Image (cartoon, rainbow, N blue to C red; front, side, top):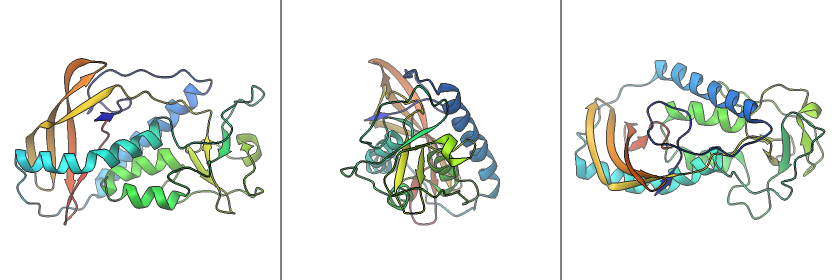
Amino acid sequence: MKSLKALKNRSAGARGIKASALAALGASVLLIGAMLSACGSSGETKVDAPKLDDAGAREVLTALLPDAEELTEVIWGDGLPVDDEELLESVSGAQYRPISADSAYKSEEQIKEKAETVFSKEYLVTVYAVAFGEYDGEIETAETQEGDPYNEDQLGLGLRGRYYTDKQGVMYRNIALPEYDMTTEIDTDSAKVASQNGSTAVLEVGCTVRGEDSSMKVYLRYDGTKWLIDGPIY
């Protein structure tokens, strides 16, 4: 299965980055996300978790990876489709375009509903900061005409997430943000439990990066009823 590698030292493998006029902006968004992830871990809830063996780890990973891969693509990769991908050279900041009608996800709520079945709430602090510019559950909204494209200077706001929803409920994607190429394929059959400490577990998995054999760590967290992915899979 494919996944992404771009931000965390916990992940392994090389990756390629599509150049963008807004590469510095994208890096800043990702850095803020990483900082929030670290802050969010201080309030984590300790729960009793069942002992996870290698067979169980492979089962969990096989079940979670397809959706995790899809969401990682939505947040860090190509993103949701928009009808207009053309960048305006006259705009140096974010450029938001309405999500296409045929998109698999049409609202932040739909993305979050899926994400909460795949990722731990601790890791979602990072995901929501990068995806929606959401910090401590708070986001800003702007008055726009439904479906109109608009740019950062019209919002009067600073650094924002990749997606934005106006007061009419229309979701937009920032087409100026850099996209990250997926170059890693994870071999779920190779997953082994490297360690488990209460409700968290670290898996060692084999993978290929641009066709070259490699390995990486995948982090899991038990939320009281099920295991969830607790960090980036790229």
